[in-house]
Amino acid sequence: MKKIFLLVLLPILLISCGTENIPQVSKNIESAVFGAPSSKVELTVFADYECPACIYFEKTIGKDLYENYVKTSKITVTYKNFPLLQHKNAEHDALSGLYALSQGKYWEFSLEMYALEDQKKGDIVTDSERVALGKKVGLDPIEMQKSLDEGWYKKQLAKEKQEGEAKGLEGTPSVYLNGTIMKFKSKEEFFGMIDAALKL
Image: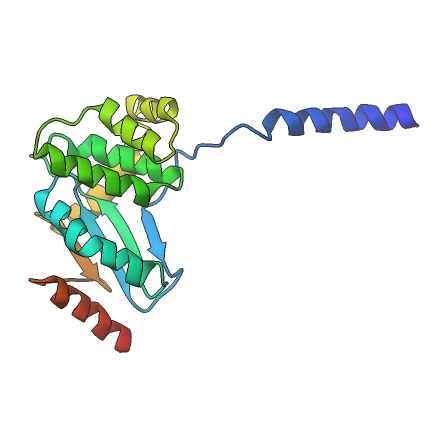
């Protein structure tokens, strides 16, 4: 009886040991969503890592948005990639960001990616530089390079681009507050619109 029990149990143990420590990389992901699981205030941000206006937006607004509204779960923010054709780095920047998202490092990687593009001022960013940023925030460099070589997240990127095109986007950043495009000229005006929506 004991021998039969052990024979039945052994394959289960082997299966468990064989898969327990193998990292599972999802190649089917959705857009990056942060903040409250559900909120009466929802922002959708279409951005391009190479876009100077997006870099400025992240430097002047992005950090405060994350610290004061996202981390505190006041609002929900969805980030979508909208790489512009004139930006030669933008597509692989976006694919790198989506890989980081699959590993739970989207925010950390995005900060580094924007900082690098700010330094480059339109010059070429290589995949090796992107992978180095990934390694800096704790991503597996070999796996990240493979994701870029094989285009793991091209389908998701195409989906996000199509969503932007369907809205008639011509530039970035484009920010929507509860489905309506936001038009603002200053950081104060931007956060004022969010605060007003929270009070409704």
